[in-house]
Length: 115
Image (cartoon, rainbow, N blue to C red; front, side, top):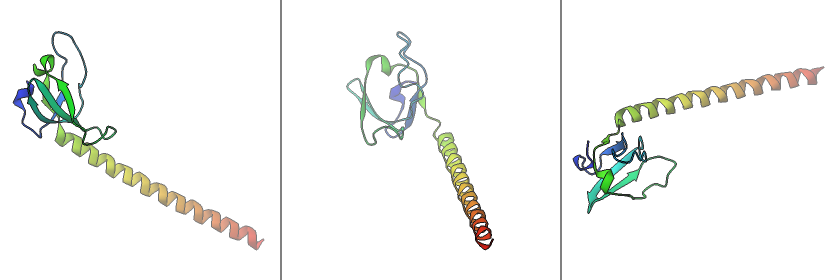
């Protein structure tokens, strides 16, 4: 799909390099398409580790050809939610284990004090 087929706000990704040079930049990167003007592509990378609200410019030319697609956003959000829920369960289990270990240690300390 060509970049011109998207509308502002679409979550997109590069799925294949430009045909003539094989440059693999941006493949699989989650980004928000802001627009395209004067042969320049404007996007915002959505990787949480990158600076938020920074507008990134991709020089047109080879990047305007086919090789773009919508990012599987629904799947991404679903996996992110499942991951968050799993992390919460792990945190809760760890807290419970720590509380049990503390209780056991307290009981041992009390027994030692009685002897």
